[in-house]
Length: 384
Image 1 (cartoon, helix red, strand yellow):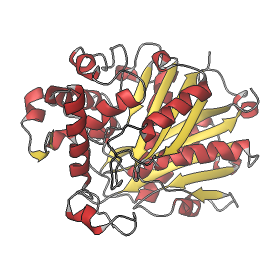
Image 2 (cartoon, one colour; image 1 turned 90 degrees about the vertical axis):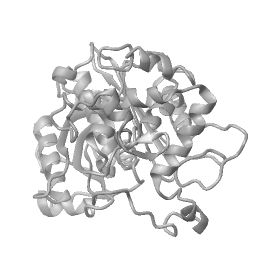
Image 3 (cartoon, one colour; image 1 turned 45 degrees about the vertical axis):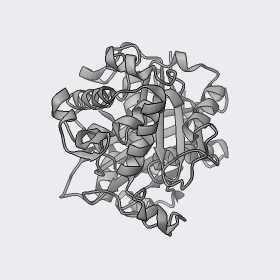
Image 4 (tube, one colour; image 1 turned 135 degrees about the horizontal axis):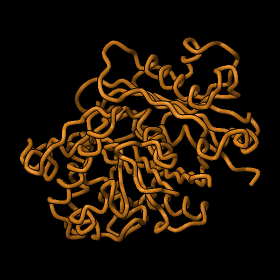
């Protein structure tokens, strides 16, 4: 189709802690890798889109890459910034802004939990007084209810984390690469019940970059280089869902923001969830991965218990999830996290993932989730 958009280059700066580099320097590294991967130069780009929370303005990259007059749009949507950058770049191509674009996200957070400004998020004082502005408590409250409603055990939370660190051990760009046992995770410090220390990700550093293009440019590249963006859907929450920084919850059930984004993405791609071969899912903590599996339609509520017990979400399982270790092993630099997921799917679809390579995937899904109840779901397809 004339409006098809492709990824032809990817670049990643190692996640974790890099004290000798600023966030912008890490972004420059990721951009140069993406340009090298696509055999392009900075001057070849028609536009750029980027985002960061704590590491500087994304458009300041022009000071490091070159002042060429390039249109550079800054975006920010919390932990879903990578998704908003992606869809903004796609829309730029569709609107005729150009045929070649850069998508970049990066961050460099201080150690410890994120500090929340209640006024900035339009939250009442009681929300902070009750502890919900501390996201560890919010996510623990949410997964507690889900576990009660759908018979999910604490063992499933442990298994999600075990898988993450096992996969992280195979990823040279991951932060936490030490394999942890069931007992290591279960017996670690309780943060907010039922979530222990090793069931949470941590704010970190890192950068990720993509080069996207229209079909005319993509036709210059071999099929094993380009990956088709089959669908991308970006949604905000509905009234009544219990999302991060949402100060109310209704007793009646409505679609979560992730479910809305997934339904829209599958409709645009004209495929069903059963056709997905591999998925990268937001795992701010172990419970998030469990809930998002069902919200994305990859299983029914409650089926996660058996899928995890049978290792079906492992690299060699029926539906590999978070094959690079996810947020648990990589940490979460919020500007880069969603693009990291996209890059992992590109590498998997190209067959370049080495020891963590899954078996001949054709369709790959990624889902990023952030405050205040924002979700982006993308579906990529291998070009045959």
